[in-house]
Length: 124
Image (cartoon, rainbow, N blue to C red):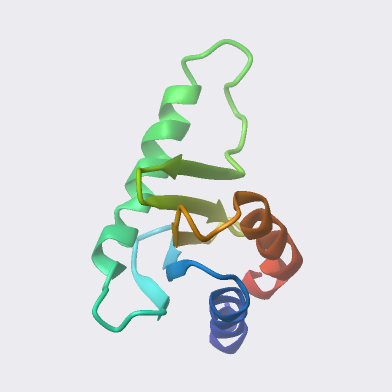
């Protein structure tokens, strides 16, 4: 895990995409936040982001009970609220989870996915 590369990932996406509220990079093992980027100093989503580890674990467990989905990997999760869209990505090495919070009205879902794919090698 290269912390400089992780910070570059967060900063690149946070600065190049409009409507990004925050980006948290979390260890998959223990939910520790290793990097946090926010466009608004009044918002701190770090604690909420650490719970994404448990969300991924529970969804993965649930998939094991659906025919033909056992042993499948979750590539990403997206969920939308009225004002926000949340993106959860697993790094290629599966040791990091990225939680991106974006303004639903300002951020294009496709662009977030494209920027993540373009920069995910920085996560390891």
